[in-house]
Length: 360
Image (cartoon, rainbow, N blue to C red; front, side, top):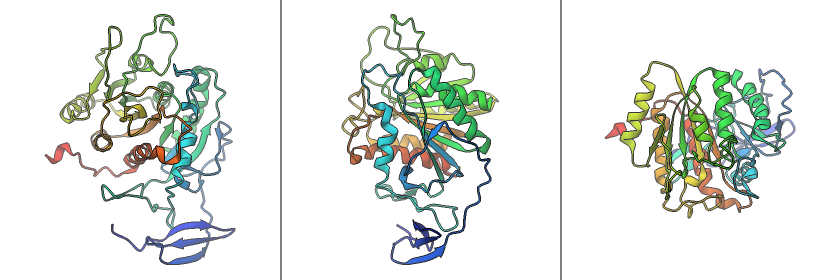
């Protein structure tokens, strides 16, 4: 692990801050210089603020990635689902890994991944807005709040990360994003389920976490959906085919490159969107999901695929991570924190990132 002579803000006082070096062996006190933020003072009454942000980031309004939770479970088919407060549980778990700003507010202390011998999040200046204020009654009523949040973020040309909530929120996030940007979207979905289910009793009129993909495929502004990790047994009516739907295993790198290349070579600008359902993980690694599926991938395979996607898909605008349960002990969320960190790293990493496929 290489060290530098950078100094990081580890404690704030009334008008002074405490700095330390990367080894935490030297300390300095200095006067805090107020950070001027050139943002209109919009009253963001659609967010419920938090006392401590993800990874204990200083609560700022300016950065290159905006994050917020969506405490919504109305779209789940499971009664008494605990996915509503997943963002709160994950935020609490992340406080064990504090990240500090450098003295110039330009970079962070990051998080060091021992296994892969690399720093993450050095360039991620995270703005945690807290959770979207939602009166949970229907996806349609949540739609207005989600539109307001995205409409606030987009003028700053920032990327964003959303923590759900059930997976139906991806439907309204994507639809609102296409309206605001007027650009087509390529969705990369990590999931153990295809989310194209059909419910005869409901006549498929209600969008939920198990069918929202079928509704997204009908949207003209959705260029394609690449699903990675779908598994398990399916009977008649439980699998689905569509010309814009592509399903891959974690080992299908050649197929991934071929699909992405074909979609991006159609001459139109396409932005990327990554949606991560945590039930794609092996249940032994993360059991806190409503609908676990056996024979999941190794965490290493998942992280490698995330890095591959950010290397080959240009202009990824946003990510979401959904369907985790609240109520676990902080350390039970470690595998999901790994995923969140690599998603945020992908959003802010400079594009010199090389594809593992190209290294062959």
